[in-house]
Length: 110
Length: 116
Image (cartoon, rainbow over all chains, first blue to last red; front, side, top):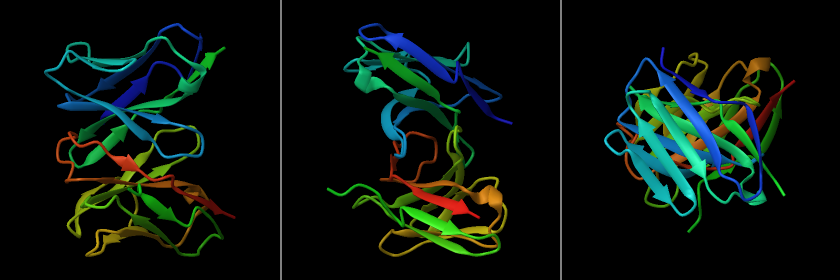
């Protein structure tokens, strides 16, 4: 079955550093991959979408890469701030389903 | 503009009961999807509806059903509730049907369902 793995359950980094989150997928080659942010007790919020033929996509301090050979997407937050602390989810669409990863909980320490 | 709204925000039920959850999409959005999120996990896809028709179904038992109304709002129904149905139920809307994953989804803040 199609599966998404995210690098770790939790990631702690110091304010001002770059956070890098990893999303690996198996048994499928998605045409699109999306990243969402979720705060405790809230619904996920869409951040970025990247197509399979795009190597990289940027939005302000956020950058996403998509390597179809490695079956991997990297999500970077530069100059991280405590307000970036949240759970980050990657997701692709397969058949008629959206397949979400388990999420990585990022904590940015002041 | 209002975002996706879900009601109720919290609900407590007992095993064997039935529950109906409601969702109003963003104005102009015609697609609604439902997800179940257990604590510590990513959302799991239950249904997608577009123009009142079911366009996708996840791996959930027949106790779960949904429908979409002419105004594009939606209901999720769960019968014969089990303890394992305790979760956050999320609704998401998008402008069009998400046939390939190229549509961002806009989520509500969910209904927290607890089964005793």
